[in-house]
Length: 292
Image (cartoon, rainbow, N blue to C red):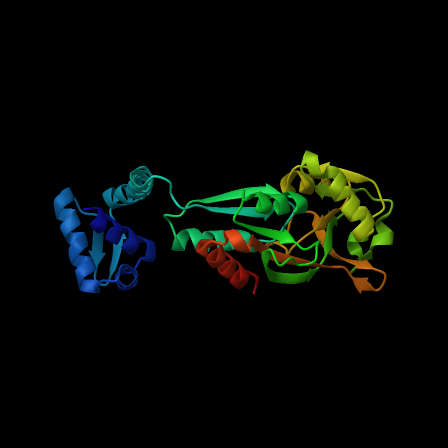
């Protein structure tokens, strides 16, 4: 019956028998017969058929919504039982740059977990140095990080993107009307940095000495807190990575320059060669496609 329920869910999702049959890899006539058999077993009608179209009956609509919960619970039960039966399960541990604002990682994670639903993924957050040491200690298998060191032969170093650095600033700030801003023009505005407590000093030194932002430094534990500080006019935030789809309310992104040249940052996937896993390479490949 579970397979028949999944056929029924596919038909409702696509609102079309032929598309549902294609997804389920069976013929259109077969999927129709399976749903009719499900209705006979249940003892009530799920679909009201009208020539080539159909509508859910009230019972069918109720059954559809509850069946989604049922199948999700079943799949979770199977995964947990498989873990108990198989002992220690293969797991992918990924390090994610705490201050990265792009969506590529989330898209790659979605595709990977859909392709490998039986492989758990654990995500660990950190600033640059934290992720570097997590890799060295074997606490993560792969890390999405910015490049602050020369590439090392110890690591697989996959360049994902090289992009212009931006700042995020409140739309009501007069600077938001500029089409670009130089680091020296920001000396009187606090710089908001996303950082753990342990990395505050290191991150402040990087943005002061390497990037050239000379003003006061404010710290936030995560992106949400940092953007709330930006929206409330407390300062600007160096924005790493490509912008998320859709605009952020009351926040403007402006390219950051040093003199006449834009400041560029490299984003890479790193993992130790001696501890390489096939699933790490697979995730990195998916990640590359998302950046492309």
